[in-house]
Length: 177
Image 1 (tube, one colour):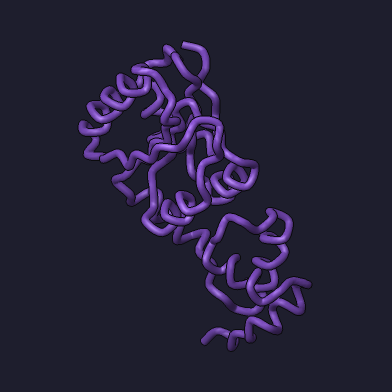
Image 2: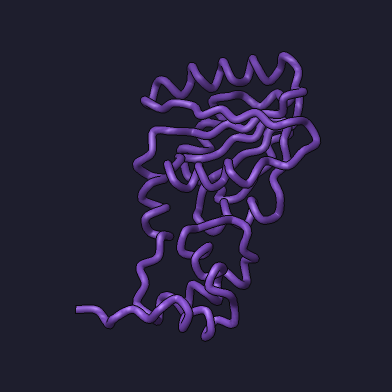
């Protein structure tokens, strides 16, 4: 039998953070600095709390979803890429989850929380940029991600293969075609 878990207040005190920060780390909220997240997770691990990193990895492997984030100002190029991705995703039995964001604005935090909750095989960004927090989160949970700039000529099959192979676990730019 495992050791009894300590209360969140004790974990927070040992980690030098607030109780709400410990709660955010437990629920994998992305708005915790990577160094703080690492410190809190170590205290949680010592305190006997189960951590979601293994579960997140399993959800990634088991998921039949690929997330695509597209800037709303993208040209017809993005529509062509989405159509190609949908066709390519059907062959291995995958489905796309498409999120649009306003051009020039960061991808919303809520998107990342939903992604973690449902799982994903990977993330493809079409003419978007992720915040440093989102990049750190994707890397921490080994979620492969690819960024395609507007008018990229990279073949869709190559993008999907990169996601399915599970590499790289950070936003990888595929600007060259």
